[in-house]
Image (cartoon, rainbow, N blue to C red; front, side, top):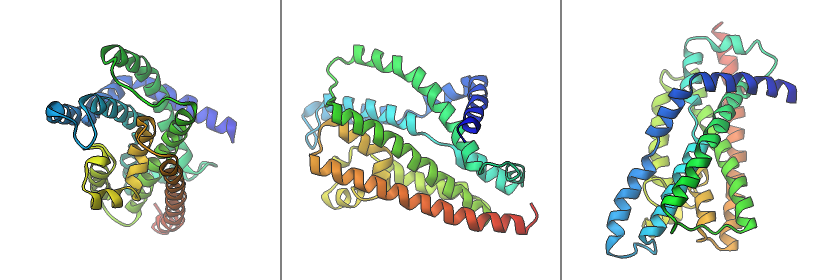
Length: 262
């Protein structure tokens, strides 16, 4: 299995480097958190908002931008197209489940993004020396673990939505709806602390938080030990839940796909 993954990864890295200009353009476009930073930074000029000063907003949105870049997925567009056009049948002939091929492609992209974003993060620190994070060994370890887990959740959920193309004509439309909720409840538009208590209570348990906001909250130093433990437990719950959804949809979708002789 490891050798097969290594081969897929090498091929995907080569493709990523071949289309590196497109990847860079996508990364530039995918900076909505910076737009929201400008909005909240301006609003906080008169004083802290819900405990967030201007420096806090800078720290939050810069890290959110980095997290979003490192967890970004686009498998919906590939898989939806291949299901609707019958191209998936070729991948079904391979010994590995197609999800491994798609995942390796995304992993290659993450390696490229990390290489690009790491020096940029250092440059940002030089420009904004007042930004601060709670960089304890425990917090750093949890941040990395939850960043990886959040990325897997985003990948599996989008993959599952793409599998709906076995039954519906435009799974991408459903993904757009899902993404709208992710923008609002994943901490991109605003930190969850800024929402009303009723919305915040609901958002704290929904999966969108654990795809993006939770890793940022860990390094922001705003969570108690109990909050972090609860967040880790909920992250693992949603991971297991969506893996179960994926397996259920895949088993039934492949049967439907084969029944039509695609």
